Structures are given as structure tokens and as C-alpha cells.
Length: 341
Ligand code: NAD
Ligand code: DAU
Image (tube, rainbow, N blue to C red; front, side, top):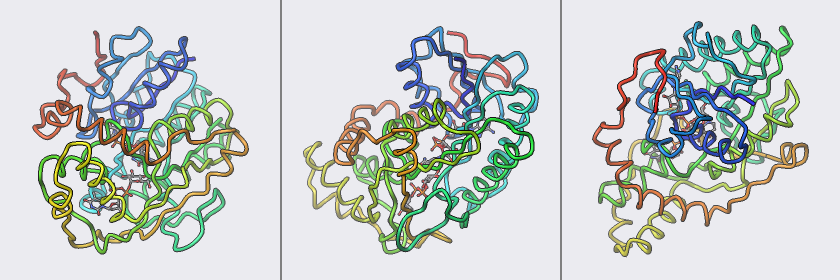
């Protein structure tokens, strides 16, 4: 099978590409990524020499992008993904997340290929009690979430109108190796290591539902191979935590593992002004994918967070090159150019 994976230089899709190349010895992956600030080819250094991997620098909004490429399925991970950035400037979110998805849907329609759209639980908005299931109404609250909800609606419309073969996944908060340090978990780990203040929005009691990134990748793969066209699949690990509890847990493990003073790390916690429109709680009911596709998470949170903290502590060069900016498009590729290794 030949897969076109968009956004493959980002956090989740780079883990997905590694998962696919390891799991299926006969699969070929084309990684299409425009290398925004969030795209880092160093995330895939260990696979870039593989004959079954091709990197192409390109924008999902470019309607000529698929010319000359052969693939059986498009997996659309590419997006502007950070809520805080969407509050400062929504335009790139609307462009990539909506227009980019539309462009890829057109390509899927013209090629009659499978389209798997990687979406988020944030499209459902905030939930005080209970859990989101696939029938929950879409009530996005941030410009990021609204752009993802719009793209989900476009996918639905292409299934209904053009009868394309497409599935949507909606996952909860991911964590694990290669996550860009603007997101909460890597930010806490790196600020603890570097003795910098840890900003906690509002009262720290907002709840997020955390899943280890490889479990998300396994779920996406289950949907690709066994999902039913037109269906939505929620993905989650049943692991809700208030932000402040999560932050303290990370600081305790980091202190133990690096032999640092736990009290000093706790003193780095700094309550700051709340995020605008900050969703109070996310909680996903993953029973449909468990029941219908036989997927289950493999990683417990205790194992996953320990593994993640150790990954960041032993991959200093990776994050130092992000902090210094050296990671950005370090092969200096032009649009439409492939990485030749
Ligand atoms: P990320 O920000 O780490 O990576 C996004 C990637 O997309 C980057 O490599 C970037 O260069 C690329 N990209 C951006 N605009 C592009 C464009 N116009 N053309 C081509 N490439 C472009 O994101 P992530 O956290 O890995 O999220 C991946 C996907 O999963 C997103 O669709 C996101 O909405 C979804 N998701 C994320 C989470 C999470 O917790 N991070 C949870 C559920 C769903
Ligand atoms: O739920 C899935 C979503 O999870 C994905 O769709 C998004 O792409 C991904 O970015 C993530 O969104 P969140 O806004 O939940 O993640 P973030 O890591 O930005 O924040 C997690 C929580 O921590 C949230 O309640 C805000 C809070 N926070 C975040 C940062 C960056 C802080 O308190 N301080 C911070 O500095």
C-alpha cells in the first residue's frame, strides 16, 4: 500500500510514519509537509534513508501537489494545531485546516482514493459532566476548533455528495516523543529542566484527557484498515486529569529521575491569566472504536509519562535545536522538492 501522509514532519504524523514503516514491511509512505514552524524533519531522521519513505515539501492548499504521485490513501494530519496561536491569528488556521482539507478532498474525489481525516475532540467543545460520543453536537469554542469542525463537515459533505471513501477520527490530547515544546507537557518538562517558570492558565483546574501518541497512531491505523466510510471514530484513553495535578506529577517524576530538588521545581509553577475561551473539560468515550474495530490503548499514563520525560531528558540536542531555531527546514528545500538521501 502507498500512503500519502500530510503533516508528517509534525508530532503525531512523524510517530505515525515510524509506526507504519515498522509495522508493514511492504508499505511506502510519502510525507507531504510544508515545514511550518511546527514541521521538523529531524523527527524522522531515523527513517529518512528508507527506500519506502519519500519526503516532499509542499502545501496541502496547492492543487497541483499530487501531480506525479501515486498513492492508495491520503491520511490528513497536516494542520495548524496550537489553540493559543489561533487566538492570536486565526487566518493560517482557516487556510490550512479548511482550504487545505477541501483541496485534499478534491484530490481524493478525482483519484477515487481513501481519505482519512485526523480531527480532534475539541470540535465538541467543553463538557462539564459525562463524555463526548460520536453523536455529540459540534460546539467548537476556539478558532482552531472551529476550523477543525469546518473541515470535518467538509469531509462529511464529500461522502454524502460525491460518495468518496472517507473516515474521520477525533482524538483527545496526545503526549509523547517529538511533541513541539509549545504544548503543555513538553513545556513543563523543558521548563523544569531549564529552571524556567511554568505558566498555568487560570486556576489550573481545566481537565484534559491524555493519550500516548503511539496509541493514537495505532487507532488511526485501525480506522484506515477497518473503518467504515462516513463513520466518525472517537479515540481516547479514559485518562482525565486537571492540569495542575498533571503538572505536579511531571515535576515529581522529573525531580526523582534527574535528582533535582522537588520543592524547587514546584516553586516554578506560575499561575497566569487564563486562555481566552478556555474549554473547561474534555472527556472522550472511545467505546465505539474499542467495540467495532477492536482497538485498545496499550500504554498506561504512568508508564507513558515516565517514558516521555526520559525521552526529553535524553534528546537534549533535538529540543536545543528547536529553541535555537536551527531545526527549521535545515535541508533548505524548495516547494515541490523531494528529500534525496
Ligand atoms: P503539529 O503542529 O505538531 O504538526 C502539524 C504539521 O503539519 C507540521 O509538520 C506542519 O509543518 C504541517 N503543516 C501545517 N500546515 C501545512 C500545510 N498547509 N501544508 C502541509 N503541511 C502543513 O500537529 P500535531 O499535534 O502533530 O497534530 C496533527 C493532527 O492531529 C492535526 O490535524 C491536529 O488537529 C490533530 N490532533 C492533534 C492532537 C494533539 O493533541 N496534538 C489531538 C487530536 C488531534
Ligand atoms: O484535545 C485535543 C487537542 O489538544 C488538539 O486538537 C490540539 O491540537 C492540541 O494542541 C491540544 O489542545 P489543548 O489546548 O488542550 O493543548 P495545550 O497543550 O495547548 O494545553 C493543554 C492544557 O494546558 C489546556 O487546558 C491549556 C493549559 N496550558 C497550556 C499551555 C501551553 C497551560 O495551563 N499553560 C500553558 O503554557
